Length: 250
Ligand code: PGA
Image (cartoon, rainbow, N blue to C red):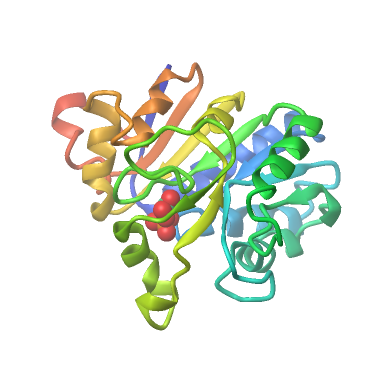
C-alpha cells in the first residue's frame, strides 16, 4: 500500500524521514537499513547525527547497505558514494564500520561484484527499512527507465542522470558512465520503503510515480506494488498531484 505524507518544506520532510529511521533503530537496535545518497537525504542524515550526538540514538548494532556506487571512483574520491556516506553520516555514528556496506566501484572484476554484494545482503537478512530518493527520470538507485533487472547489476547511466549528477563534477565528461546498483527486486524485498522527494524539479517524476501507469519507463512506479511504501514529499514536489489527491499537511 502506498501512503503519502505531505511536509511543508525540505527541513520538515527531513525531520519526518529522520523519525522513520530513528523509530526503526529504537524498535529494533540490530536492524538493517538500506541507505541512499544524493542531495535529498542530507538533512535527514544531519538530524540523525544530531540525535546520536545528543545521546538519543545508538547505531552500535545497526547494519547498512547502500543502494549504489559509481564505477571507477575510489572510496577516497569525494565524489564517490563511499566518501559521501562516511563524510555525511557513518563517520559520525557509533556504528561498526565493518557493518556498513556499499558496492565496490573499484572491483577488479566488475562483473562479479553484483553477485558478491547480493551475497552479503542475502547473508545479512531482509532489509528492515529502505530509504530512497527519486531521479528526475523516475529512477530509483541507478535503475534507469526501460528495463527491470531484479538483482544488483552494472548499469550504463542515462544522459539525464549524467547531466543531473554533473553538478557534483567539474565537467560532465568527468561523471562516470557506469555504476553498480541494487535491482528493483532487491529494493522491493525490503520490509518497509520510505521515499523522500522534495523540490519543484521532482514534481513531474512524483506525479508519474503516484498517478501514472505502473511501467518500467518510470521505475519508481513499481514501488506501488509494495505493501509498505511511504512517500515523504514537500509541497513543491506534490504541486502537480495536490488537486487530484487533496493532501493535508502532516
Ligand atoms: P538527488 O538524487 O537526491 O540528488 O536529487 C536522487 C536520485 O537521483 O535518486
